[in-house]
Length: 176
Image (cartoon, rainbow, N blue to C red; front, top):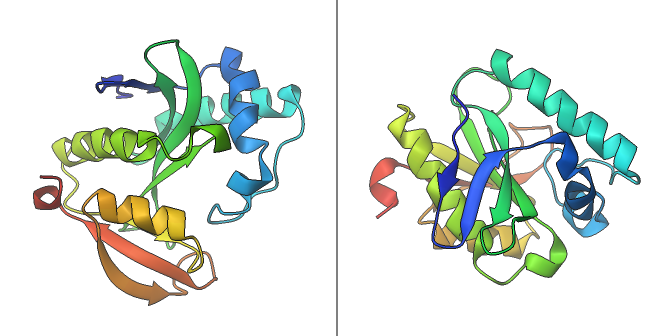
């Protein structure tokens, strides 16, 4: 099941092909894609972005629940400002990652924390016992968001994606 979740300021919903222009402002920004794990090349045009959104939509039914990718939409104007993902971390048999991606002009407004908290709550309702967030050691913004979510720093590892990453963990009782 793909949720549509609402918070005070946000709607979390499935990505749609019509979101390509807004999604490109997120996944076309080097400051976003260069920080993703694994790193991805920034998309450069709406056609490529639309193709990625279509691929995410088509992959959804075959993902291990509650995995998926969602748009973060500002409720006041219906503008997609970010994305969320729940996915299994390599080696793809146990740990679930919660990740958040906002377009740069939406940074610093608390949207990432608000959206990720809502999705984490939903994921725990689906039976997950813990979620992880991974970030490059120099990604202080991601680490700060993880801490605001109530995630606990558990160390660094190169277990995921073959690169050194800082790892944070959250359990249902951490949501508060």
